[in-house]
Image (cartoon, rainbow, N blue to C red; front, side, top):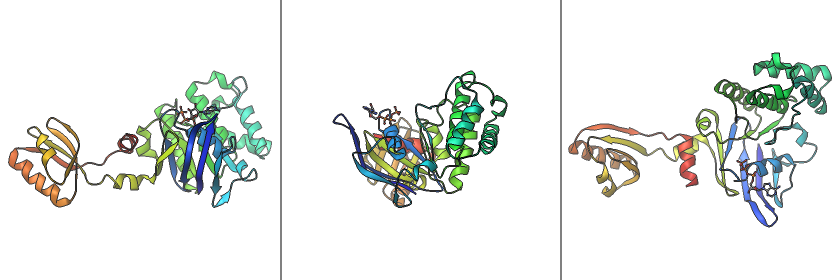
Length: 293
Ligand SMILES: Nc1ncnc2c1ncn2[C@@H]1O[C@H](COP(=O)(O)OP(=O)(O)OP(=O)(O)O)[C@@H](O)[C@H]1O
């Protein structure tokens, strides 16, 4: 498990991270979401030791991170980092060797990963001759070459087409299944539900959520969607009901208890037809939007 403990960082008196703590469990995919400028990249750079924290610490399995443990990290930085004018395979072999692989071991591993992304036939091409989405796949390949113990990926899904998203998802899932902590930032909220086991939400340099996806969903378990034959405005004055959203004949509400739900259902039926009265399972994207409100 990777953990951040009370990490703060300012740039020129401007606080960017304010006492942030969160966990990246092993064996799970952790999504790191927040608006532009919220502090995701700064956090990842601190985890990687590329930037120092003003205070706080980062630990892996309880041990503070040192130069000796960080080489086992796989990192895809926001600014990427491979050379556009060099052939893909040459760069990957070179990077693999920097991480201690033999030349032939690095080549074998790079070709396996490229094949997984459907790019083995482009191994000898210059990086810049690939589409942006394919360049992105190569960047991720570079982070995975040395079979890292921890994966930190800054926006790995940006620019990928749906097939590449699937390939990337399955690679990240494989890593998580090995027990590796995987942290990735993303602005693609639609991916959260299908991908993440754990979600960390950051806003203005503060952590608003650090929970398993199941825990987050459970916080919203009492939510119901109602679709009636007439206006739903009367729900606002019902005891035991919190209205989240009302639009004409439809409403999204929270009931304080199951008996409140049953009473409101009976009232609704006495007022006219009930087209829908169902437990509403919000997506993680919905939950995210609500938390950052
Ligand atoms: N080297 C730096 N010097 C000064 N300010 C910086 C530096 N690096 C980051 N910042 C500021 O810190 C804040 C957080 O930036 P960061 O890149 O961590 O956000 P982010 O959540 O990754 O955003 P995005 O989603 O746009 O990539 C921003 O206001 C940014 O301008």
